[in-house]
Every structure is written in C-alpha cells, then in structure tokens.
Image 1 (cartoon, rainbow, N blue to C red):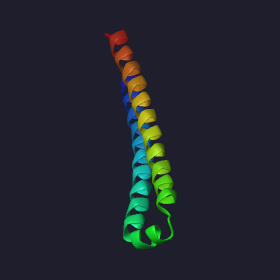
Image 2 (image 1 turned 180 degrees about the vertical axis):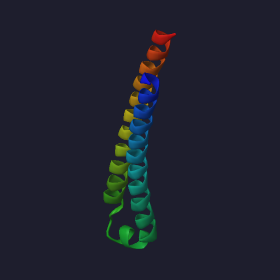
Image 3 (image 1 turned 30 degrees about the vertical axis):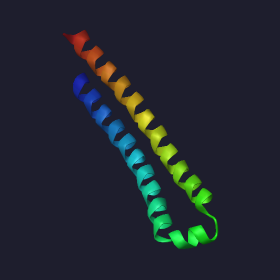
Image 4 (image 1 turned 90 degrees about the vertical axis):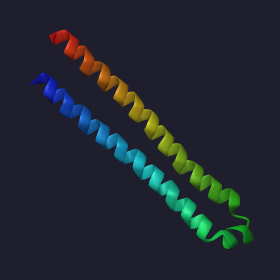
Length: 88
C-alpha cells in the first residue's frame, strides 16, 4: 500500500511538472511564430531585440521548469528506491 501511494504521488507530481514545462515551451513557440510571421514589421520598427527578449524569457522559464522537474524526479526516485530497500 505504501509503495502504491508513493507511485501515485510521483506520477501526479511528474504530470504537473511536465505540464508547466510544456506550457512554457508553447508560449515561446507562439512568440517565435508571431515574430516570424510579422518579420517585416518587426524589422521595420527595430523590434528584434524586444522580440528576442520576449522569446528568451519564455525559454528561461521552460529551462527553470525542466530543472525543477529533474530535481523532483531525482528526489522521488530516491524516496521510492529507499522505501523498496527498506521493505526488502
């Protein structure tokens, strides 16, 4: 029962972390698509730096979420293995 509960918790946390990371990448993709679609307007008004900053913020957020996901995965895996070894 304890192992099943831990497994359920790990899956729930991983799904949440994956959703946040995917959302950040989707936002970055939207900014990129918008910028490329309107490239003439962006270039005409000298907005390349602004668009690069917008894109960079979303990519950095996705990176932070990826790091968080890795830490959570490692922690949960360690707990899971420790419980398995404890009961073995």
